[in-house]
Amino acid sequence: MPKINLDSSLHDRAQSAAEKLGYSGVEEFVAHAVENELQRLKVEEAEGQVADQLRGLGYIE
Image (cartoon, rainbow, N blue to C red; front, side, top):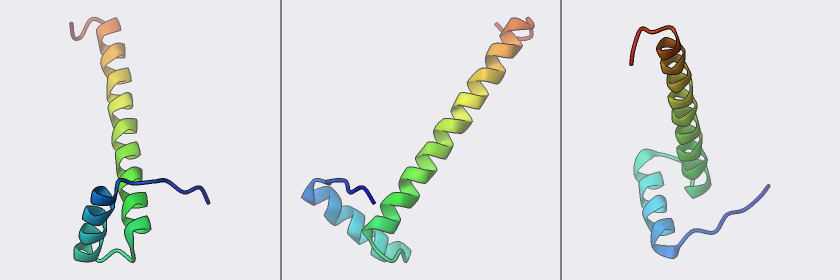
C-alpha cells in the first residue's frame, strides 16, 4: 500500500481527531477524510454538468 508523508503537526492533529472520533488510527481517519473529499468533488462535478445542460437548454443563464 502506498504511504504518504504528513507534517508532524498535521499528523498530531489527525491522531488527536482520530482518537476523539473513534477511528482505529490516523490511517483510517485520513482514508475516510480523503474518501469524503473525493465524493464531494464527484457531486460538485455532477452538479456542474447538470448546470451546463440546463444552460444549454436555456433554463438558466
